[in-house]
Image 1 (cartoon, rainbow, N blue to C red):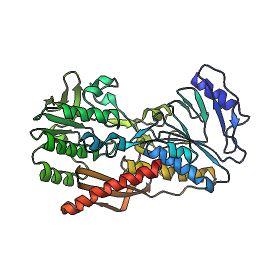
Image 2 (cartoon, helix red, strand yellow):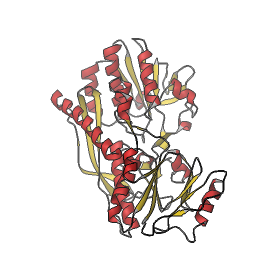
Image 3 (cartoon, helix red, strand yellow):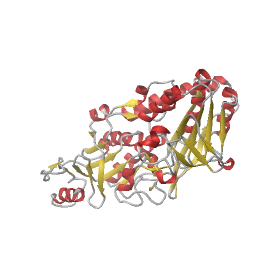
Image 4 (spheres, rainbow, N blue to C red):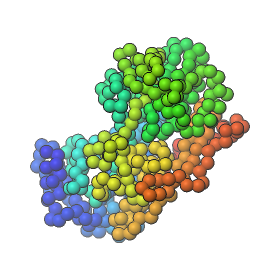
Length: 441
């Protein structure tokens, strides 16, 4: 039915869609297709963006603002099922009781005011051959270019016992998609008795925001130190090394003493399965039954990327790093956490930069110009306690088929005075305010 609806929508045009003949058809799943409304003759075309996070929203906004670079208006449609976006950056502070969840939430009103058409639905079908998408309520949308920014989903097959059903995530919350899970983990911490153990299971890379689990361990330790000082944090890690490891370990020793224990890959820290019924975490060398289990499963690109045919055997999306166009599906671009970006990390900062670079590439393609190779800058801030932060910044350019890090990056010094740590914590807050305003208005 979905493919037939899309086929009907496209075939109602007299010729294949081009920049000047993009058509919007709206169907009900059980009704015949309505006659499409044709865009203005001066229209450059239509770009549909699926996913309204830091990548997708930034891309949609940049596309609409670039209309002056084109001969005609560019119709930009953002499809996002959630009316409110809840940010992962700074959500660790919500878990630790340092921040309200409302400070993490952003709507799409300003994007709509700037001319982006926002559709509050999930996409269920993508037909690349027909260049069309279908939403859950039967809205069929053709496109000239499609941008996928679906973020991550979990690779449940890679962690036996932690399946797609809600049972595991209710008992052993991942809190790796901010919102209800964030608040659930916070409530579990609040309910735990003093002297309890909080275990954090960390997967191997690639993973969303690789330093974030260690920031989470730090801020949970801060909460325990101030509220339940006889408790501890146990990190079960599928890696031996992690970003900014020396900075984290120095801060842990300085701030939390022996409260945080980390077991790396070579010590048997990789989690091989879980049992939600008993809240048991199984590793290669032993089992653990903590009072609170924060299990972060292995990850892959958001499911809609798989529906589009844009994922490879890794579960991620290979792209052309100049245009972000999928190497597997023509006229489809992938940005943010879902793409295989080489050296560039999966982070909000990177997604925002990719969204704007992808928009610039699409504008050039629609205008018949050759896209320029982007230079992206990403920065990651980590807060390990109130007033104690550090950062990592990098620059990335296309090199062959991937992004490679180039000169100009920087990381916080290991032996820095507390005054610098306090300044970086304040800079992190300013960064968050800036990037959310830049993305959502």
